[in-house]
Image (cartoon, rainbow, N blue to C red; front, side, top):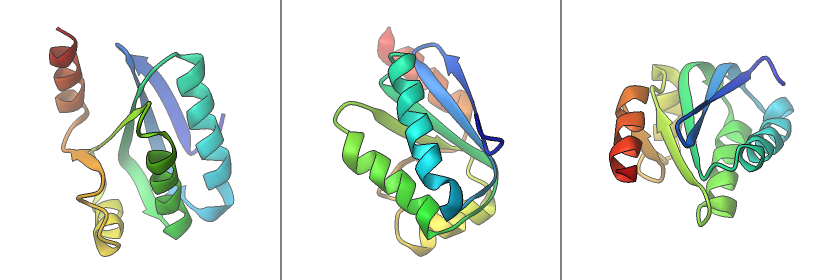
Length: 117
């Protein structure tokens, strides 16, 4: 595993927590890890917690776009707790409305529980 990414299974979702910078030198590895973990956990929901991410470059944003475009028919991607810098980066490239972004992880998990009931 990578020091920039930790994960845990929460109900039927996998919560990926990003730490530090999400930059071009690690995005290919992160993308492969995310897909591998979702397959291993047999999960069709990925929650990207970005509260501890400090910086994202265009390749990092491109990684999330690639994941969404390539896998959105099979996997639900949700974002939560974006740090201010990450939110500004997504906004500067006009992707805030492209992704499903929520304020808190608790909100996301509660919504997922209600949907299963």
